[in-house]
Image (tube, rainbow, N blue to C red; front, top):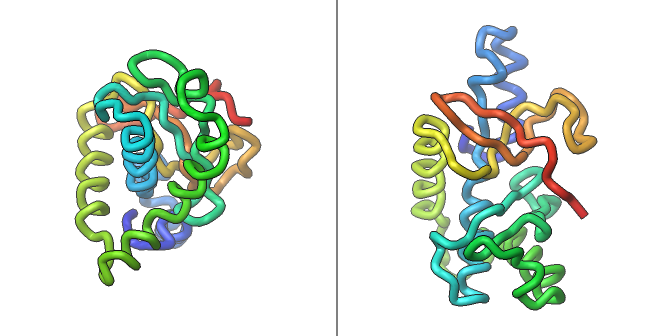
Length: 172
């Protein structure tokens, strides 16, 4: 599900299909926010994107989403130990939440190419699998105290066009 509100649209698709479309076959795009979080860390630190891992964006594609700062690693080292903590707790979280609006204001147009790249990344990882976890909007079974039945961005690992929610990511 790409069109916003993606999480709500995923719920509606499942609900009105009468279960014909299995919840495991419905995901919604939080990869755009995931990619933006990686981009912000790379910009702040000068680290290559390929060296940044452990990024997780929880929630919905909105101002209520939360990029977890406890899980991010740069070249295998916790970002919380190497990046300015005040920046991580304030500017970083806010920039991930508001980046889409900033791009649209700056370009006077949508961030359609960023979204297209996120769709490509989302589908590639879902199909080909991941070595590390990524953010993906999936059906909540109640993990992380998120009510069961909602589609929300959670950390997942992917393999063979399926995903498994990672249940032990620290959220502060």
